[in-house]
Length: 363
Image 1 (spheres, one colour):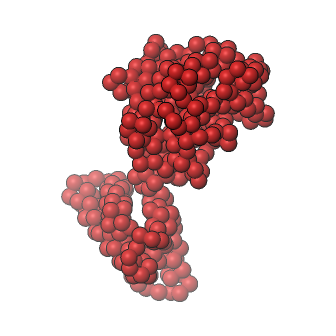
Image 2 (cartoon, rainbow, N blue to C red; image 1 turned 120 degrees about the vertical axis):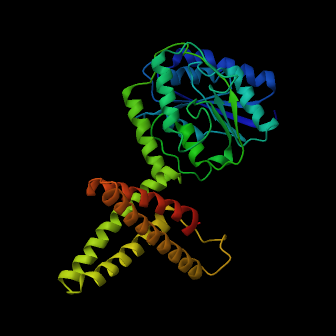
Image 3 (tube, one colour; image 1 turned 180 degrees about the horizontal axis):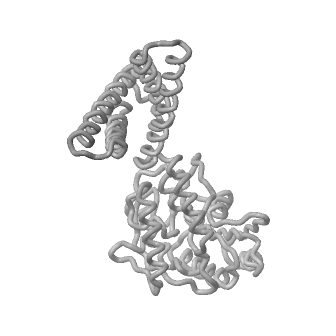
């Protein structure tokens, strides 16, 4: 290995584990000829973890970073980026749940597979979780399922991640929660990703930090990612919210036409529909689907705008037709209550509008 590697270990009350894991990681560096550095970022642990790391720095390639007044695994790793040197950055747990011997397995993904990012996976065929209680297994399965809108890999929750420095350069990472790996998977600038099977062990010393607060922070992280990352689920939520604002605009314009301008209700309805549709078009173009015209468009921007607007109008009219058809079918033919029939019809029309907008109007 010729690359320089920095491994970040976030800690809180991990003095015993740090004292044991640093020599092990250093041994891996020496055995495989890795120009490596260990960065211990400690949240001012009462057990003096930062001080233990500082003392180990006299013998091993360790940098001890003591944070005061700050707390959190993800923010600690992000802090470690400031001290990282070399081509490849990684982070792992301090408690031996990630084996130092498997560092080389992840690093080989860069030389053998030309990967930009490598992540340890407990759920590949050769991967394993050792002696986990059912509660932890269910929590891990649930967390992985919730992460599925952002990545298709089998184990985005492992927390054993290595990547080329450029993957996170210029990327806005949110220091909420314990799952920075998921944030990098969702936002990072990489083309080739490699999952590497690992054996995940129970921690050597200390207590697990999986608490109710950690679960809440993870849910907050997922919620923010839905709005920040362009995924089908997040886009559908935005599309639905834009539709809600369109309804408000429609009713407001309709009321103005009826009660202030004293127009007939039919032209009022047509005009208010056109204004609401235009509002929805602008919001979906700039927010939901984030259409960008720089560099990729070979025709004048105004022409592109007009073409997208016409397509969006056709999609909306098609959605309106589907809404009216289903409303008639469900209520008049099948006998469903008119409110339930309208709810199902609107839901179906919204789904059609979303797919049409995503795949055609704003493509």
